[in-house]
Amino acid sequence: MRLPVLLINLDRALDRCNFMKTQLAAAGLYNVTRISAVDGRTVGRVPEYRPHEWRSRWELTPGELGCFLSHRTAWKQVVASQEVTVILEDDILLCSQFGETIDAVAGRLGGKDLVKLDWLDMPIRRGALPANDSGAELSRLLQPVPSSAAYVLTPEAAEVLLHRSQAFCDTVDDFIFSQQKHLSLFQLERPICMQAQNSGCASPRASVPAQLSVSQISGETRDKGPVLYRLKKEICRAASRCRERLVTDPVLRLTGGRLDPIEGPSNLPLVLDVT
Image (cartoon, rainbow, N blue to C red; front, top):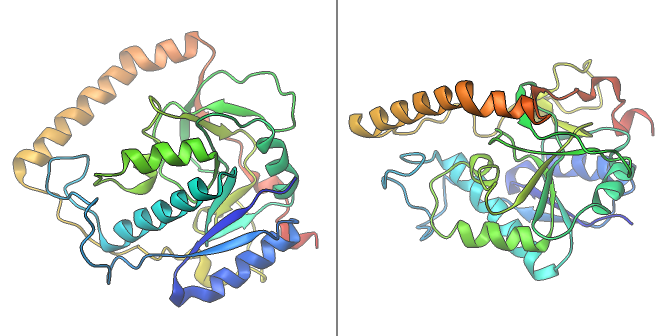
């Protein structure tokens, strides 16, 4: 079984799309649909976007808004197809085990499940690791993580994300991975891909286009809001850090959970290195 893939890609970056399709074909994934990404610099009024309403962010940069809307387009397509689907951004490097691991992950999914597939070089709060019986070790994600570049989800999960994003002012990664009360969120313990800009653990490869390592939304700025809004956010952050240190993390360790970095995929060859 090979899952359908939705590939989010800006019209002005078709070289990235071609590189991604080459990687996916090498991994045995041919059912690939390109999602024309929304350019936040040219998009008109978006009724669901609610800046300046004292939400988690005061406003989004054009790139962040376009990224959120692009993922929202992908969620709509997953709901319409009623198929478990992989969603990828166009700056991902795939490891050689990508195809077979995706098959193993798909066999584990049901209900409102979403699995993050990529690697981040940071400590992440995760639940206890269950016994591995499928070749794909999944652990519960217990905190928001700053990457929505590669994940697989069920139609039920996509429907929840669409419903809950009818009014938003979050980056898409903050939004997705703060839905612990509404979705079953998992991290693949042995990640099978990584964003090119996070691939410092891997040696440079001539086959990887240089432009992949440059974020398409870097350098943009946003209004961080009035003083009272920023003060409220700082107080909330301080209270959250205190709660994590005194309550959340001790309980996490007592129940077998972890707060450590995930093993990086640097020891795995990229899919294009073995084809």
